[in-house]
Each structure stands twice: as structure tokens, then as C-alpha cells.
Image (cartoon, rainbow, N blue to C red; front, side, top):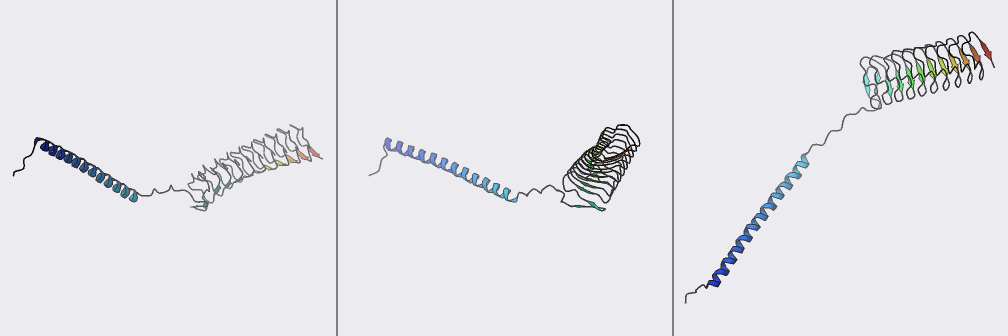
Length: 244
């Protein structure tokens, strides 16, 4: 007996086939998306694996040899303008920063010998000999010692702010805080002791040994004061000697 499909059976079969086809299409789309995602992930891992490691920026090594007897700066921007200068040593931020042709200089401390182009200077302490340009044979030991010196030569300043205001004066020797601090153009002065010859600006050939000795002298010349506060109030007197 031949099997006959009823209208109901035909409708059910069509609906089932439609659902199966729709499911197959969705399943195929989903599998395609998964495959694409896996491929992209694999490409990402491959690209990351071969990415070059960035090279670190070159930095100066402490004590780097710059040639011609010059010792490299230990901190940034020290001795970076050097051209023909020889036998220089710079330790500290911007020490000997502008030195080009100066030779035989030693700068220890931030800003020491910052503007220097002269020879045979030694500066130890922040800002020591900071403004020195062509001045030579100067020695500054102490914060801001000989800070304003530009062309002065053969000065020795030991102590914080010693000979701080000196610009062109030469042949001065100080030892003590604020000793000969305000000296500008005075020459061949010797001040040893706290604030000795502190206010001297243009006076020359004075000797002050002791705390506040010749402390208020401004433009006096050829005076000798030995002892605490000796000739303390002398401002312009000449050729005086006070002991005790």
C-alpha cells in the first residue's frame, strides 16, 4: 500500500528542514568567527614575540675619560662644551658647563666654574667660582666662594661666601666665613677670621687677622689689624696698625 503524505506531515517536514538549515548557517558563521579570532590572537602573539626591545638612552658613566686628560663629569651637563681644553675634572651638576678651551681646572660641586674658560682654577663647593670667565690660578673652597669672580687672578678663598663679591681683584687670600665677602676690585688683601675685612670693596694691601678685624673697611689701604675686632670701625684710614 503506497504511503501518502498528509498536508500536516508535509508542513512539519518543511518546518523541520527550515530550522535545520537556519541552525546550520548560524553554526557555520559562529565557527568562522571563532577561527578568525584564533588567527588574530596567534598573529598578535607572534608580533609581540618579535617586537624589538628598545635600546636605553646613552648616558655618561661616572669617571668617563673624555681624552686629553679630561675626566668626564659624574652628573648631567658637566664639562659638555669642551673643545680643546685639557686636564680638566668636573664633578657636579653643570660643573665647568661652558668650558671650551680652559685647561687644568678642577670643579667639584653644582655650578662650580660654570662660566669658566680660564686655566688652572680649583673650585670646591656649590657655586664656587661660578662666574669666572678668564680668571686664572684661583682657588675657591666653600659654598659660593669667589662666586662673582670673572677675570680676577691668583685669589684664594677658603670658607663659605669668602671673597664672594670679588670680580677683578687679584692676589687676595681669605680664610673664614664671609671674609672679604664684599671685595670687588681690591688687590693683595689678606683676611683670616670670621667676617675679617668683610665690607672691603676697593681697598688694597690690607691684613686682617681675627674675628671682625677691619670688618667695616671699604676702601682703606695698607692697614694691619690683628685681634678680635681690631680696626673694626676703620673705613677709609690708610697705613694703620692695630694689635689686640
